[in-house]
Length: 427
Image (cartoon, rainbow, N blue to C red; front, side):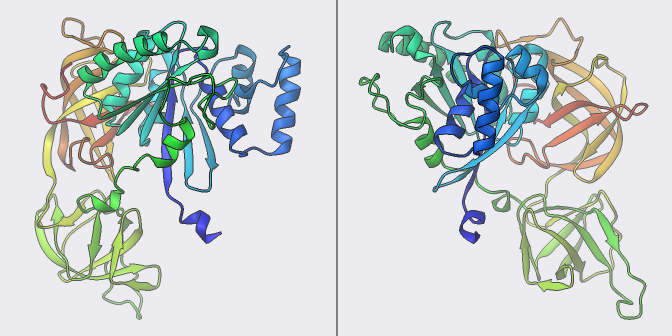
């Protein structure tokens, strides 16, 4: 059991247009890796017969919502879990429709890699570009371009090469870091778990072998130390008369007794006197542990403040530049006020400017139309009522992201990534 718990974890997302075969591919991975139970398989067989299919429809393993099964499409983000002897996996199966762009952003936000499916018959389409842009936007380390339904084009090497050459232009424009190309048939299993004899011209790895051997992004414990204070513990009891502990969850990095730290936004300095995990005393802690930190000095810190190592301090500013994915039917507008939730901090903010929207189908910036509607991605600036303590998203996903909340309805209306400049995310 301990061996399973200690196994390395890879999170990946799948994306593609409607009918590109995302759900079938995931079903194939689950089926061929023996990660489904007999009763699940039996339920899928029954559903396949009810829908009139002549064979077991593996897509039904992942299309959990009734509306999805009846329409044969993926609507919501579905998280699936499976494991092989080498690694554990969490899959975010995201929808392909443009009206569900926000769902893909949600599914990809915690992923290490993205599998982008391309129908071999249709080649690169607008949805391919959109999903690739989102993978680039969210700083995913690896993109796997799975050219699916190769069985319907007679496993043509020329068609595969044409798609690969076209995508290489997109990958270069979006500055994608690592891109792999695989010819597959999700329905029949070619090059998914086992190599296919039908593609003798393909000398690369199978999809599962690639997923098992991809380097996992460095853990959050290797990043700069960021400890957002969630709660101040003051027991006021005889046995803990002078105890003052700053409780929270390490967002990133490590911290140890004796470390010199700075409390933000006051920039007060102190030293870590003790670290507690429940009643247990620790010499050190690392992300994502939840601990209580005692400081050598009696400093004024409360929820929303941040404890960091003094030799590596984040940005502290009330003016932020964001790439925002808009999640709400009511459009974003300049001058609108929202609540910003960032780590454990919550502040008011005003939208100061909308620099441009992104046409993620054509990979172009739109500067003359600044009406940001649901599923749009835009570059904006905001001013907060008090400074936030942040890193840029490319450096730290936790301290570089925030959400915008409607002050009246308490709905989450936008997901923001903090970026350094207008030029960096111009296409």
